[in-house]
Image (cartoon, rainbow, N blue to C red; front, side, top):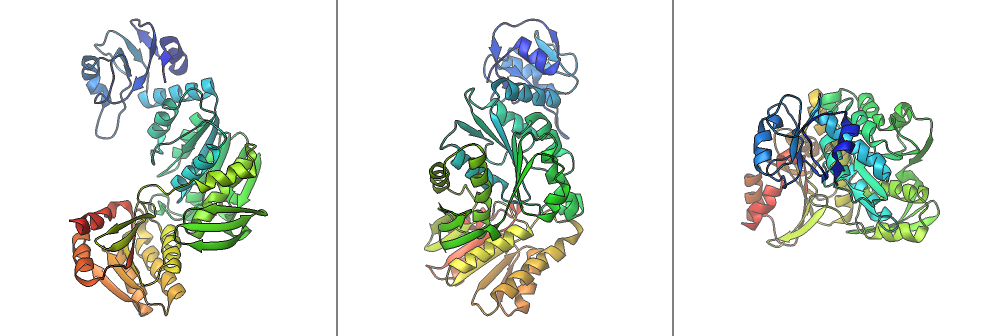
Length: 435
């Protein structure tokens, strides 16, 4: 997406030194900058992109944004380069005026984004957040990479503390917002479930038309929005069929299908259904779009390695998502092996939350023959609770040790389920088996 100097000046109120004619793309990375781009340096705790303005000019940049004097012949001086980046994204959002859909939640937001994209793409020219690039920088990248004829822009919004979602939504100015849930992810940073719900509900601060949200009492309590509110729940669904890689259900009197398993995935899809109808889509369009959804990498990713069927759902984990995904797996597969790892960012109550997962699974599946392997210091507490319910639990310190146990002790043809926080790097288990 390109801008004239006058547009950038209007967007950021920059003090311009020198002159340039034409239209320019914005680049924040000197390693990928193209000839003619304008370099916008970002700053972090351990780096200052402004120190690389000279390198940007050497690489062919037409000029630089800066907060201090710069040797470049053409500069746009602003007080804060991140704010300038956000202001440029907001300028583009207003200029091309797509319908903006904002999505957040403690878990399921990336899956929901992909489902919403799959549905809306049946009718609209749609653009979405890449992968899970869901912070303020990712928001700017999403907006500035959208084609100019985009009709619907889908923005995923993550957060690690108060104010982060509010900041993004201020510049995104969403027409519609989706909150998938408000669980215990990041409770170590925010301190309580109420605070998590408050932070998620910041998405309504600049919301224009409607909120579509999980039927959660905390969300209802803190969603301070006077516009239309639509709440959905798995309790509103009649499930007709569920098996590996497939779900069929009835919602609001109509039948839908998903090429993925799990009640939580069905629940995530309800927001896409509701949004589709709000945007004037037909039942056939919505049903067809849902049918085209496929899970993304490390989210229920299935593969066969050395004769083992492996389901990798280890992109992220919190107590709610671990309970839900493991339950789905155990309901669908015979002779299962479950490998669980540490869940991160749970704060002072991390031991309690890990024990809670073990207790939940122990009570729910007591009496079933299930092999559990737990990896890590915190996952040990999951295993200890499971052992109380007489499950066979094996404990491992790391991924290599776990991989060796699988090769030496498990037989081909079994199905292994992997679930842990991203920091556990459970993909290493798969790579070790391949080697």
